[in-house]
Figure 1 (cartoon, helix red, strand yellow):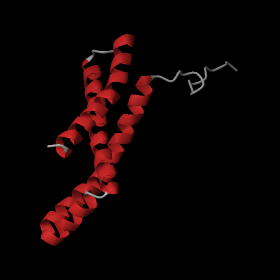
Figure 2: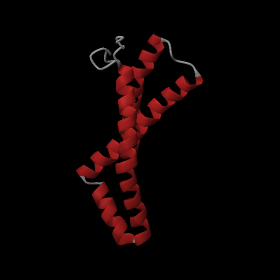
Figure 3: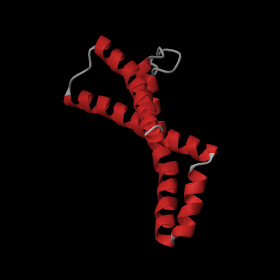
Figure 4: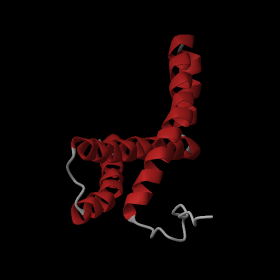
Length: 126
């Protein structure tokens, strides 16, 4: 019987920033689909139900937990967008060089955090 090669597994692969960005892309997409859809439907339902329902939604959104959810959704959006743009560039055939790939893998989450902070600074301090 011939020896068959083993599939690569986690003990063989070295952890890298590209793996983190890939995982964050999936997690942020799931977060947007699940939590984002819930918040969107609640907001639309409150808009359609009248001022009292919208006031309840606005109260819940401005509680500390509401701000955590909204900031989390904003971070998820910008993280998903930045890593999606990175993947789009790679789909075109660019950015596969190791140094450039590593740079954008590290830069994507940092840019997403900066965009989230800038977005909320614009909202809260305007």
